Length: 236
Image (cartoon, rainbow, N blue to C red; front, side, top):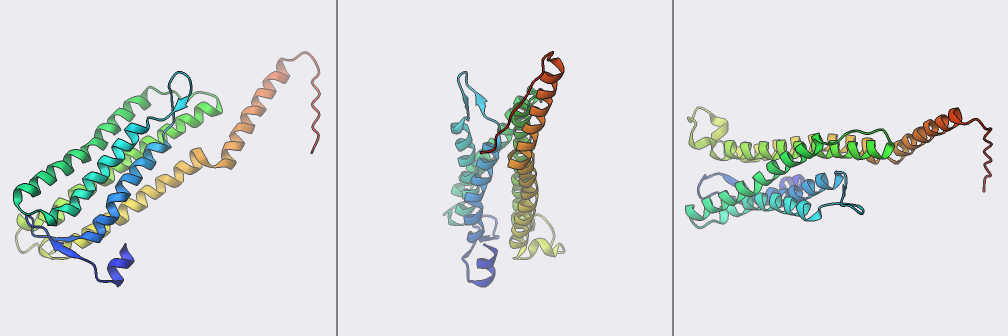
């Protein structure tokens, strides 16, 4: 997206209510990105035992991701609103669908507080996945809240601050804000994604944890046994 905006002509429109620039390419990038990041965060979470098997609540996950994409998509619609009434309706829809992620974070936090780390490798792995999913979800809340606040600062700031605050009256203020928040979001989220990978999904570390558990189990069996145990291993 940055390469396209730097190297090629891109459509820029004016918000009919705020009078600020709207860079359509940026919102085309953020709309699928918001839903994908939210869905990926949900998928990292540990599965739920429904009485017969471990499963995921896919409806809740896709519902949350769809709400975040819809909330972001409204930013693309603002410059096309024919009047102030339509603009306010779209803004309300955007804010309402955005707040869904905050309620979801509250639910996940309450559910995580009831979890115990356990002692087996499987229990620890599920606990770590829940912990990292909660951390990523919190990061999503932080990022999207920051983007929302900075949106109003950069787009509506010039309406309330004096002319001496030249940065807010600069037509490029929205571009500066969007580039800054895009950079911050990707750096923070990527750092947590890497940590989540090494904590729960790295195959080498998972194998080492299971071997350590097997070693401890065999040590207990050996110490508790009164007979001699001979183990023969044949390489095929």
